[in-house]
Length: 310
Picture 1: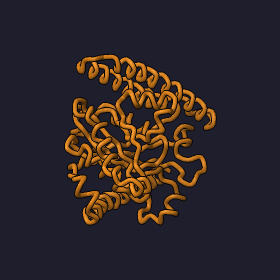
Picture 2: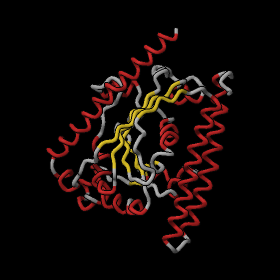
Picture 3: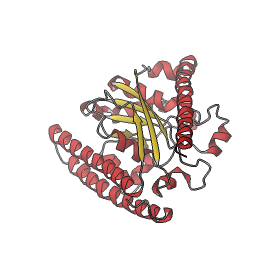
Picture 4: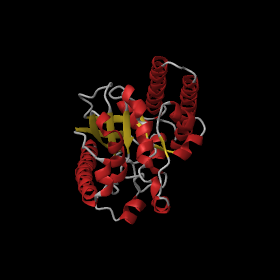
């Protein structure tokens, strides 16, 4: 609707609307979280949790509305069939930009439970977002560094136990956990520094997903492998994909979702046997090989479509 406006103007409008949208719904979620602390009955707590999840659903929906307002996005989505809003899922995905979370929550909001993230403990102090994520029950982690473990071996296993306790609440409410296994957003500089063997991806890190599976793997009913692409975004542009989306320059977003069986990870075996860790890393590497090929096909198809239109 507003796509006729200059890019910088669209970026200003979309940024302002996204901030207002986030403050509004995060504020309501935070209030719900505070009230929940004083509710003594589990039935009342669970009901309030469902209401707060609906607030997050509204946040995701409004983000989609903002995107519709500033740009004519063509959504190319495959693989949402047979998903269950009442299931428990672990979702792994490549990480392209700061817009990924908004896109993924919008796409999946009517197909699986609202996404939850494992967050660094420091993020709880971020205004609105930190309190909102706490109210939604997202686990805040304080990972013990190898240096600390070396100084105090008694801390070994504390992180895993903390994760298990944080995830206890998920047994009573359908949940989706997302894990960006690359550990960082893709940039050409990072790709070069890593000497990544993939054309469109950074190297995947198995530790995070193995940590999650060992903590709550039995609760998951499915593993979702998502591939996300913005084929008409300029990867070399200084502004980045987030700016290009919010300034109306991106016209197509491609999403592919593959359902996979959930691998079993025994924490004691995984963290004490190098061979097990190597085998798990190989499994993840093969997923990334296939994902890289899929991205290659997506970009080639976009070039072909663009050429035909001309």
